[in-house]
Image (cartoon, rainbow, N blue to C red; front, side, top):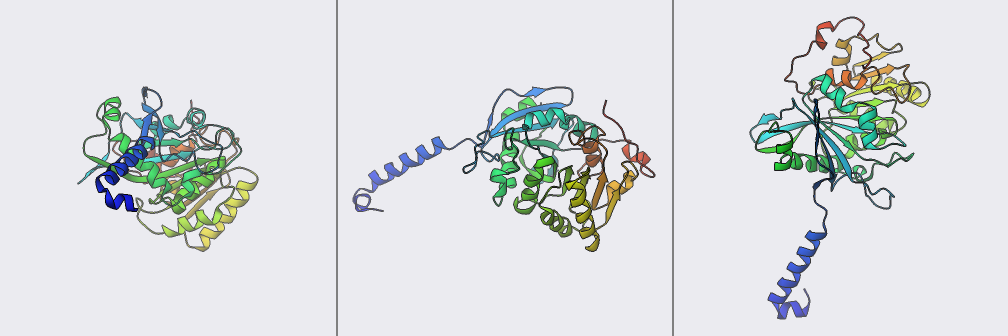
Length: 331
């Protein structure tokens, strides 16, 4: 504090207050609706601008802070003493696209609804239409935790409650189980979120996406080895020919050496649904195109069916748990 502040403490306080108000006014809101919510038969989609979205960040050229949040009509928070927990599926899109295009092209909302799982889908905007796997704020310690905190604070708002017609319940919301999925170049955001995200990630699904960060994925799986289904670290890697195949084979060998319970198939559909549920790491060689691997045979839906996410809707998916699992093409 300078001499003028000591002589005039009231003036100093008012100057401080003025600076504080200016700083508050210039700070971005934690969550702002970019457009009105959209509802359909499956649920409600929010296009939000979030303070802790991956971008803008540092000197990166990307300025879009959009994060899409989809709440299925059947969603209900898990009740606890403080209010409720929100299980999340966070999807990271690949190169040369946008979050909105990935949301539609890979039928992310539809596959979540079809899985009958109790989770909220979050799709952050990464590098816009760029061949770039950078993760922006998600590379910083605690990045994923801050992003999901923005989301749960919005879900607890009157705006969200009105749009989803009260399915979010009352009381304090906080993140529950967290699953990540990534297509193609989204692998790095998933790896960073698991490594330094500041919140425990329970499962990761990679759709022709294991291009790098192999040690990060290995160490994350091993750290959850042997734990119960709701607490373990489960990895599923769908891969085609080329780099993702070689990297998946390397990672499979590393996890087997670490006594992780692994399952793998060279011909898609030979593993049983039981294998998908109980394995800690699953590797699937797919014949689908790079752009179709996430959705054409319901890969994301089946990952969610086999996940440790909480469920309150019955499904017949587990009735045929033994033998070769049927591959079901999306209609």
